[in-house]
Length: 302
Image (tube, rainbow, N blue to C red; front, side, top):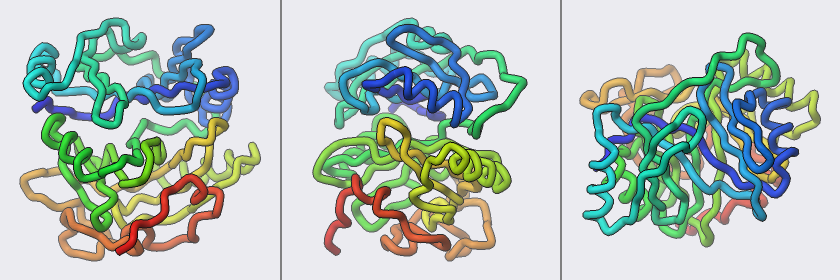
């Protein structure tokens, strides 16, 4: 097993690179640490790489990077995947911050880049746009959420935080309640990407900024049941669902096995469990707009 510690950055292919770069820098507030004809590497205001945008024929998430334990040699990762019958290879020059990584394709075909060390870009003094703190999690529609969940747990050390019935898993690799999600659906595609905001005041700034730029909020503000994060959702210019969230549950001691006590927890203590679709989705807030739901798979029959 390869011990993943945190999510790094996501890589998107986009048919309109200039439009996506403008959106994620001018509205979302990331910084272009590298900008070429066919690629841009974006960082947060704290200097962490968060998105790589590459020119491509179709809008899709093509790669996701994760940082592994710094004392875990990358060659051990190659040996592990070889034993599992998964082809992997060392690659260099991934981004300005990642010099060396092991790359393999997970069962849904997304390339996973595993790195143990990275160089931060210089923090930005002036804050503009929404300026999220970090990439928090990625969610995907897959043919079988259970088998994908097993792969990530068995090979990358993820732990199950919660399930929504038997079709939507929430997995953690650090203290955050979830870092990746898998939802069963008829075809494979990215469900949403989520960026963490600092607090409720930052969420207010995000709502105001999206409103100023006439970007509709398609769901929220709301508080989810699973993870208990406050969230809003919108679509970026390539039609990807983007979540901003704050106040996510934290699992700060794996041995204790329960999330930090919060006033809104249904169970005391709140432990990983299986939720029903209604209480798992929302504690308070408005239902999602039709434009949020149009690309979501239908709820499976009970």
